[in-house]
Image (cartoon, rainbow, N blue to C red; front, side):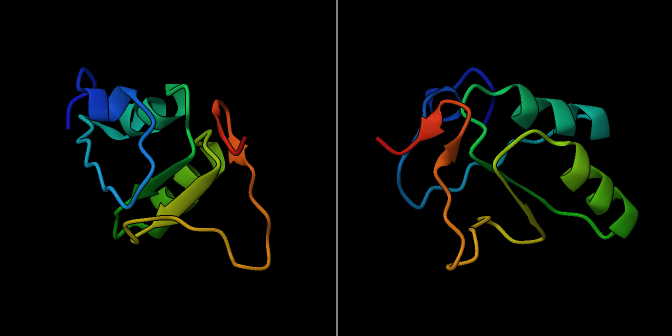
Length: 87
């Protein structure tokens, strides 16, 4: 998926996995952080330090590390993030 596609720019409800390839680490942080919805993001890495840094710096509602779809633990409520929410 590229950033000019509607699947990237529009909010999609459903089990859809979009893969956006970043050119470098800083771009990987910037892409989801600057998105108007920013509900969730997943990052795949073998570097534990990079994963912890990404989780602490990215500005989204949920972050998955080495899992395709980040989901909240069932006993936690989640009402969305940025322009992505319920209602």
